[in-house]
Image 1 (cartoon, helix red, strand yellow):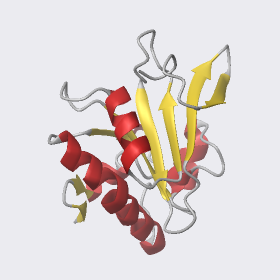
Image 2 (spheres, helix red, strand yellow; image 1 turned 60 degrees about the vertical axis):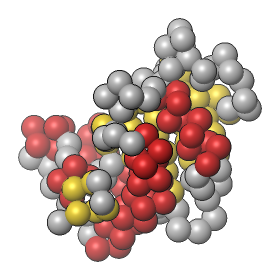
Image 3 (tube, helix red, strand yellow; image 1 turned 180 degrees about the vertical axis):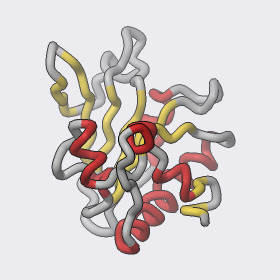
Length: 161
């Protein structure tokens, strides 16, 4: 089964933590529909722009898995209100910063987060979520000092270059 042209079902539900802890990480039909919508509206246009595979660190998380990893109760990775992807590099073809800016400038999204940028302004990964209706277009940068906090992105090139 495929989620979209370039995402397999296995890739969307894969979690090492779920496997290691024997956690059921299977979306229901409605959650699956939300994941497919996010894939078609975010992942596939991004994949076309990149022109090569993009690593998916995380997509779907069951409630039990989300709790186990300390995810937010309202996490869109659980696909109860939209769906989310954590994306990481394109195997050397585009940086996470380049993907962040492409999404920001070209796609409709609910939330976009540049997660923990390094000293050069390249995020460790990019979180992006999508809802069928009423996407907020919220853009944040996640930083640690010492706990994780979120800064509203307002075009500050020092944060994401």
